[in-house]
Image: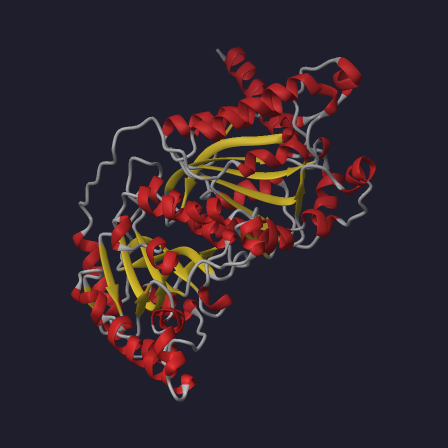
Length: 521
């Protein structure tokens, strides 16, 4: 009996020794090199910070490369360069993986890919979010055929579980090659401010097309956050990215069959705000920052913005109203007077579809003169890309509440949660102006003969504009035709939205049966 006990004890000791060796990844020197960049964590440190202490369950720790060609039989690759597992994040279940840059620069090999695919599929089947911490030089060329298969398998799983469970990617450090497409298929991408991502790095770009470009200009976080729209959130460093990813999960349900969690709050649901009158008090042409409106209304002024630096005339993000998780879509008059560009339309459409997939109610704040016109917008495909917002709003069956704050003209009025696209309740402030086009444009067409015949055409035009605006563009005119449901005191906005949201909690809406629609892309 003692001998058997000693044998087991030795085997357990060997297990612990092997586990500790694997946890060192590429070794102490490479870990130290990882830490030379301020704020940079190792893969295991990222996972340790992400999961609640003592809850992480690692899987496939003993995986290793199985290839024998090109010297791979002599390569030491603990855990094959990626850590996978599940645990709790702020008390709720989640799955995750983290590529280990200290092991063959985090490259995707056969077993490496199988591990990521495994945890992704498990998360989809278990109904829990999947979070990926990416840092990789791309494909492991020594295993090129196997890698192609694993890439394809992962892309397939990302696609079929889209809208089933939340999928969040952190691109921390540099992510290159085919490794970038998997994050591109997920719901949200976080990057650190010194991170970069591209399908081909500067040397390959120069050799193939002759373009000389820096890492930052080609695929830096700032470029992706402001120009390409690939990056949804830029974080200061690894720890900040982990913290923000955990915060985002707090607004989301575990899967598409659940509602998002409602938190107990300490912000009075009946709280009013006279400050809102001052924010927009400069008149219909005065610019103001829609962030001030949102933050004045949401619980404790807390707003988790998505795509902050991309297409700034549109604001999207998450907040809470009396503890309920809500997705906000708002025009921002501070940028381009709130006009909707091709990028702004796609930004809002993508966010709306995410909220709808995961049962998150939507609130629209409208203050836009129109879709932006001009040759550049047409070249960018405004007819298609602008239509994506119309499609997403129409398709969404979650509770939809609209508040018209300022201008609501033309297609922008329709697309931003109008009654015509089946928003459940549409409110307006007394400051709202609703119409097909601005009064100036309408008057110049309808009364062109009278203006031309007047003794003082300019004076006549201004008089006609004022009459038209006061009569037909005053918010009371569309209200009389039930284009809106009610006009509210701006100070009462928060309690009105909360009361409406509570009334909509049991909303059921069925769309016509179909395999799927054909969204304009």
